[in-house]
Length: 114
Length: 113
Image (tube, rainbow over all chains, first blue to last red; front, side, top):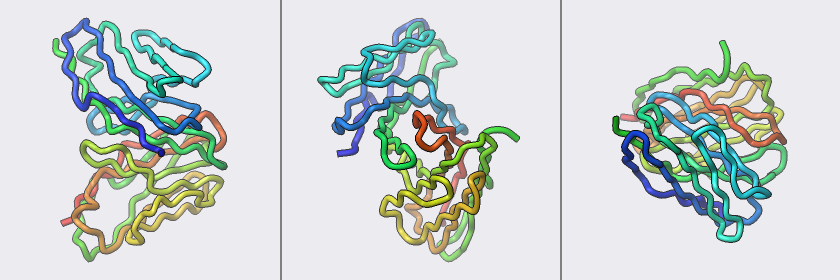
């Protein structure tokens, strides 16, 4: 199964709060788990990524938590800001021939209230 | 020009028209992708080209026809489309065999009447 399931579909958080988005996958061959951020009218852009040999990766206010045994990973946005309001996609891929192919979740629309 | 550039940004076409979407990348990548983005659905991978050879075709209807003349350019030729094909079409590029980080263009918003 190539599916990546993402929740929630939408999320509203107060400024300064913590935003948490969850994803689950089924394919144990996946070995790369990125999160993409998309603003209206723009294409998705890589935010942060993790490989399954670590359980957590932090970059500034953004942290990925990874649970290999549960086949789940999540994005935590600390001290959420109105500028973080965007759609967030989790994704997963494994080595496949000459070009990696990402399987995306369905997206979470995050709104951070001022 | 930097990054990944897509033209046109918006396209309205009838079901009997023939049109093309163009993508150009200035990142020195050697893999290019077409994705379809519909509301509240996952990005759907349509085509992958690596080193100018098509390596993936995810059961996309033949009314979509890709072309990759070189590692910097990618086209999506459209003909006899259906209204359900209305969506945002995203082009992306990457280093083949790399980490898999994709660099996306801003997309071409297609409306089929």
